[in-house]
Image (cartoon, rainbow, N blue to C red):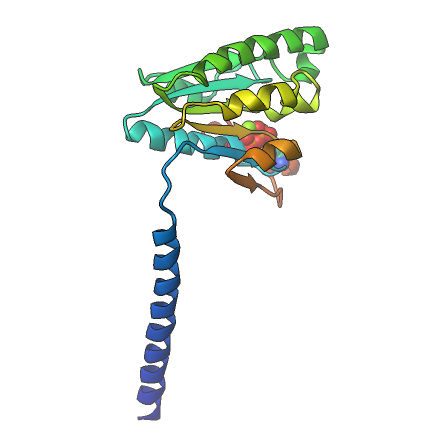
Length: 205
Ligand code: ATP
Ligand code: MG
């Protein structure tokens, strides 16, 4: 008997708590009335920055949008995401680097590749037909001084009003995060690589 009453009370308390929660969530949803292109920054030392960006790419494509991807720093080896997304005519995919900077070991070549990539990206950032632009690993260009954020930021902000922009990479500069609408920092709790596991197809590349 008393067990029944306990569970009945628990049920009632839960219903009340959920009703209050729903009121708060509904009010927050009602306040969010804007529709516009967003600037997102995905940073931090943990795994999941680029792959999160590719998830948004898939979402945008699913809605029939056109997307453009510019991959800085990394180059040579083709990844699974590139092979997959490139089949879609709504995807423009540009590799704007010759490899990790410790592989090319040529600062002047890295700078030239970064600048050439940025020149292409600028055009996409001025094209209202492109609904989402991804500048993958762009933060390193600022970190290594290949590009000046003060020069780049006004162009990032002058995008067509409905165009989304996602920027990934570790150590995002504060001014970039300040300018962004959404910033996520992925923490590195654990990574299989440190236990001796090589980059796995489908997970890491
Ligand atoms: P992903 O592309 O898997 O989402 P990411 O964009 O967050 O990763 P990057 O710094 O761009 O991270 O590195 C990409 C590659 O390095 C991937 O193969 C990823 O698994 C690996 N990696 C990412 N973070 C770590 C880490 N903390 N330790 C070791 N390897 C990592
Ligand atoms: Mg990445």
